[in-house]
Image (cartoon, rainbow, N blue to C red; front, side, top):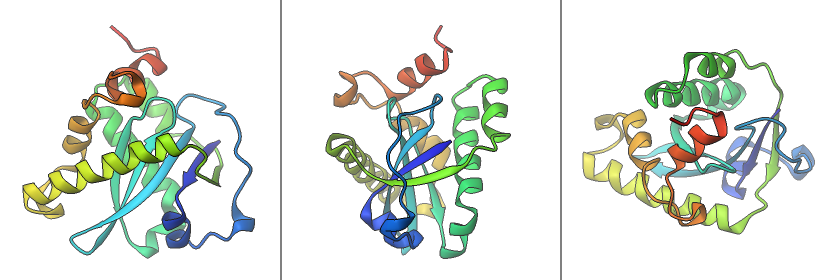
Length: 170
């Protein structure tokens, strides 16, 4: 099961009512719980996904029509980012073939929401300095941001925490 812990802004964008939100459950498998926030860049909605324990993140540009297939777009974005990070093909395949259910919940950790806000500021500034969304490679940008020391991870990198969580440390 994937659990998306969505900010109020994302809940409104997706059209979730309080009755649509699930109770928060502990993570059942590696990379199962994700915080989701959004920002506008160049008049386009961008969703930021940040894994709960590793703080590994990536972004995808979305439109209203993507809401019905958000799970598919999430998995595509995740797999692209994992491939770029040289995560084992077996692990990437396990996520790309994943058929688990998607549950939505409210955010439950102010510190993690704060980390997401910091990430949004970095993503937004880097996109702007590169000349806009059409001028950047979102996967490459994700790779850079996953190598920024995180205070919530005792100044380690999200990519190192991800590799450790997946059992792919060298």
